[in-house]
Length: 88
Image 1 (cartoon, rainbow, N blue to C red):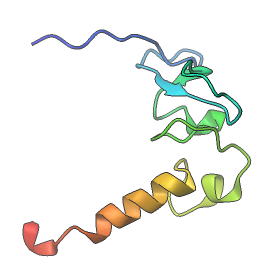
Image 2: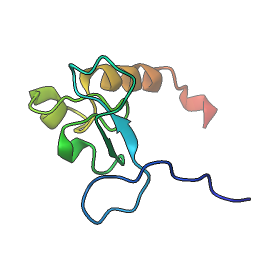
Image 3: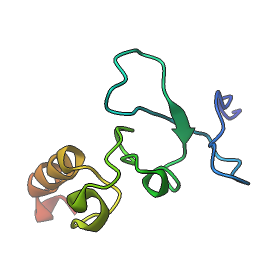
């Protein structure tokens, strides 16, 4: 099996990982503003899950899970609550 082709590389200097689509708040188009991998997107202010810009928001930078926006953090918390310990 072959790996899927990488469409866009992460724009962080010297990173060769696949870049995820990242959007600033006032972007109303379907065209991403930048591309960053999950490791580097929070360093540039983007949620590592949804790709929306949250730089400068305290809960994004210093929340329970730094690098996740409030929306994605809430979704993750809700998903974790539905996991039954008996499943493991």
